Image 1 (cartoon, rainbow, N blue to C red):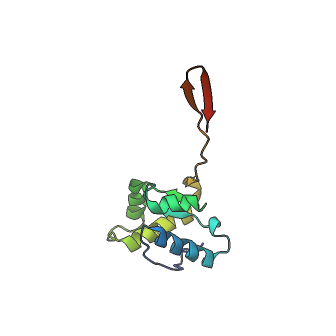
Image 2: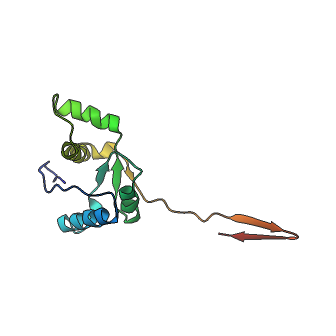
Image 3: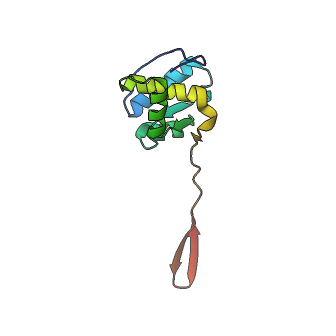
Length: 126
C-alpha cells in the first residue's frame, strides 16, 4: 500500500483465501476508517480474493497485464519483475491514473423468473 504521494505505507504477502482476505480488510481499516475509499489494484478479476473483496463491498480495479507491462517499461527500463515490484507498480498506476480505470462493483443479483409448467397450471418462482 502506498499513500497519496507514492510513499510505501506497508507491504505484506497475502494468501488467496479467506484468511488473506480478512487480513487485507483489517489492514485497510487500520489505515483509513472508511476502508472502502481505498481502491485495490489487481491483475486478474477471477480469484477468491477478488470475489471476497466484491462481497465485502471493497472497490477493486482489474488492470490489464499488458497495460501494466507498458507502465513498467515506461517507468524503469531495466527493472527486474518481482511480486513486490508489481504490487508497488499496481498501486502507483491507481494513484496517478485512477480516473482512467474502472472499479469493479458487486453484481446485484436479479431474481430470475422460472416457469414450471404442468397439466393446466403455470407457476413462477424466483
